[in-house]
Length: 428
Image (tube, rainbow, N blue to C red; front, top):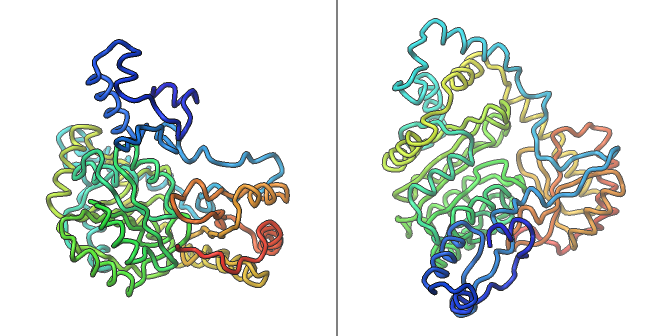
């Protein structure tokens, strides 16, 4: 069945045969079919609904949401990729060379059995966490935000557990949750982050974990405000057993202050990636949280990859100590492009969102037509289907590489493709 789903032989939403019917057809015990169905459900391939039967998931884990994209023909401007501006990323040669020199000077430091986290990296990360009000906790190093989130979820949850995630939200996370055998509970948001009433609904539906993006939320650019953080803490206070995960991948490229929600519950984790500000290929994220969570994550990490390359950890230390990135300059560059496009769209009567980061979310009445019309006009944008569960349609525009003279023509094309948007709202 899993091979058939991957090849398209079984389509999303297709009803599967009842257990006993399939057992009879195959000549096996019904318990064997039941076990296979459970395994497929735990892998996120199918979903079961009791007497209503089992179906292929609408977007099975074997079909990543990143495949939902428009092909970019030659000559079309690609503003769909979600990448930072490469010109604002620091060169890595000097930092990597310094890390290699440290290896040569102290060769035993990079062998088996050493501490998995570079001492100076942990110290520098903890100092910034303290300045920004992130609660005290040990520090771990993982291979990017998604790796950290996956390890935290699996440290506490079991297949079938519901997880509250933002809607619209990060496409990779929307893929990861069913791939782990977990169930996604949509959590609507506005420009200031998840709505408290939406979080409450997800918790009432049984959510055992909540994932919140602190700043530069993908795909909407939302950022959690101080008032919203307080409201979310109030909701979570009544659910102390829920796992809280905060993702701050916008650090170093966003000029809005951080407003942590933790420690609103007994188990929490705070993830900070260096990808957006220092380069996606560094594959490094800092993790802190309560002692039990960090102990579970680091223990499981030791049984897998063991550690994140200490050469890369030392390279990040060198980048930080040398001030290779000017966060004020980077944030200003992204803000000017983002706000320039938002202003131009507003002047043309188009509602759009983008409080932080380098993406803009445009709600649309109908997605496929809007994407096609923009492509015909020479602009490739990301279809909102990659990021949505129950929220309304939209398109995501990456502004990181926009030149000033492109903003007007792009706004004209969006206005023509979408039309004025009164009544098309962001949160539902």
